[in-house]
Length: 169
Image (cartoon, rainbow, N blue to C red; front, top):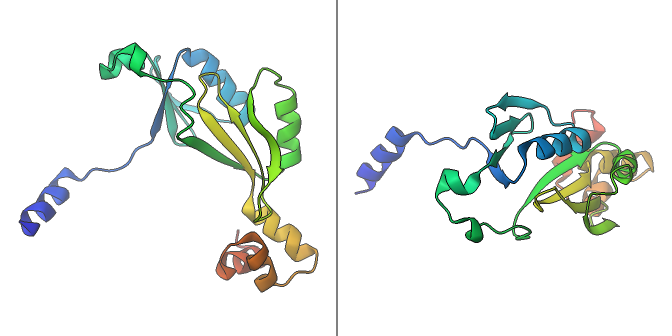
């Protein structure tokens, strides 16, 4: 039985492609992800658009999947897209220029020193934007913390912090 399963897996050769978000208005979503997250359209099929970040949006999701419209729930708060930025303050300034964007919470700092903000896209998909962990590590190293102290502060492996210290990340 195990051999048969192994053969079936080898034949199926399933490869992950991307996350897909159901949206009401593909043009509105293209604008949102382009302006706030610098996402470039790499494939535009009209109702289906793939972005440079490796995710896609789909209008008419109910029709595509056969799921009744009333079973597709907005603002489910059970998954999120995650982005990291090099300059968190600059992102907050960009976000301030878009008062129509609804925040889940204001910017906050986690125990591992990462500043984050969570917001909703126009279809109420949850998005987290965090300060790059490499930027945080660099900042702590520049303040004089050792590699080991920095790793403890940001709750990341010493190897990650060492790579930052050696400018490999």
